[in-house]
Image (cartoon, rainbow, N blue to C red; front, side, top):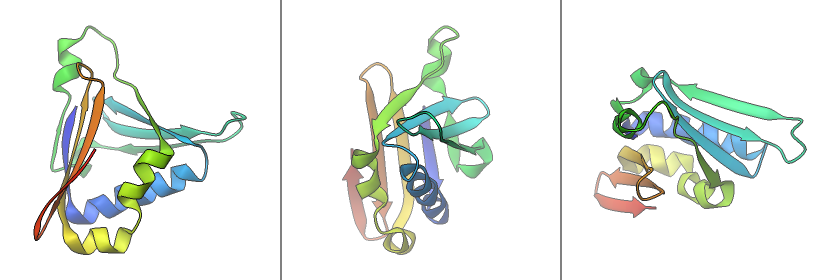
Length: 125
């Protein structure tokens, strides 16, 4: 899965991640045909949160790796502590980030999030 997010939409994505961090310690990325779902569930399985970002939310959205597999869906579990620092200060992200690239690779078992800033490039993995 590859997607590109414009600057003002990165803040909305960050707000969704912050909201889900109040529910659980894990963030599930579920790239689907109908969009990218971000999910979290608490440790007692009594609370659940989900944000579905449609392909129209992104400047570019593709599921190229999903078409190479059979009918299996890509599900990716991330520790919230590793994702939250990337979206720590949403106001500075809104001012400095021009676009954000996210990619999920099943071949290498990696999620890569890159911020492209107005005055240079910042990589976050």
